[in-house]
Image (cartoon, rainbow, N blue to C red; front, side, top):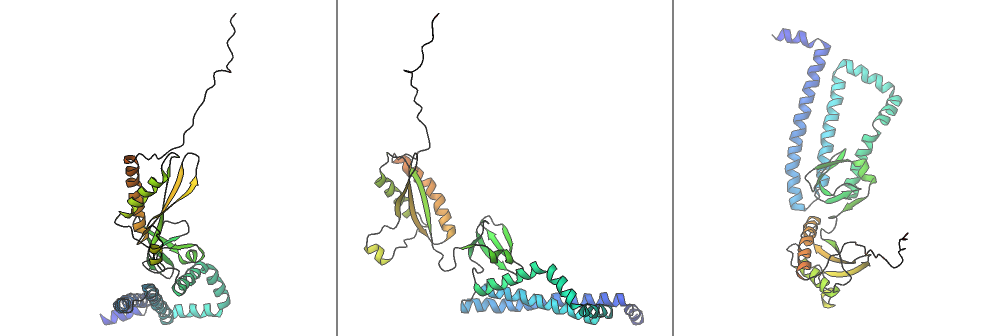
Length: 294
C-alpha cells in the first residue's frame, strides 16, 4: 500500500495537487483559528478599552490575506514545475509588474482606500452613514476590498473602498448621535400663526422620542424646546419649519412620520387648513358679443 502511494506521489501532477490541497486546507484552518483567537481578544479589548472595532476588523482581514499569501508562496516553492515558472516570471519581473499593476489597479485602489478609512476614520463600524446618493444605513464591516452597509430596509449595500474614499459621506454618528430634524408644513394665509406654532410645539414635545437639547443659557433666555419659524410665503400657503431634536437618525425618522399624522389630526380638530393649490376662474359675460338675428 505504501509502495503504491509512493508510486503515485512520484507523478509530478499528483504530488502537486496533494501539496496544494494540504497547503490550502492548512491555510483555511489556520486563518479560522487565528480569527477566532483575535475575535476573543479584540472583543475584550473593545469592552475594556472602549476601542474602535473598525481597526480590529480590518486587521483580521489583513492577517487572513497574509496567511493565504504565504500559502501561495509555499505552493510555488514546493512544486518543482511551479518553481521553474516562478523563476521565469522573476526573470521578466518588469513586464510582470506592469501587467499585474494594470490588471489589479482597482483592487489595489480598494485596499489603499480601506487603509485610509482605518487611518483617517471618516466612519467606523456601527456608524449611520450615507455615501453619495445611496440610501443611509449602518456600517457592518470594512474589508480589504469593500465596505458593507446595512440599509434601513435591512438590505446590504456593498461599496468598493475606492468609491467611498472619493465620495461625499454623510455621517450622523461620528461625534454626536443626536440629530435635529426639520418638520415643514404649509398652512393657509387665513390661519392664526401663533395657534399653529403652539400646535406644532405641543405635538413634537409630547412625542416619546423627543429630547430637549437646550443649554442652560437657552433655557434662561426663554428659548423654546421646539423652535418654529416661518420660512416662506408660497403661492397658496405659508410654510413653517419646526426644529425637533432626537437621540438618533432612526428616532428622527420615526418621530417625523408620526408627526405627519398627529399634526394633521390636531389641525383638523382646531380648524387649521392645510391648503392645496387651486385657481379661481372668473368668467366675464359683459363683453360677450350678442348673436345676430336675421
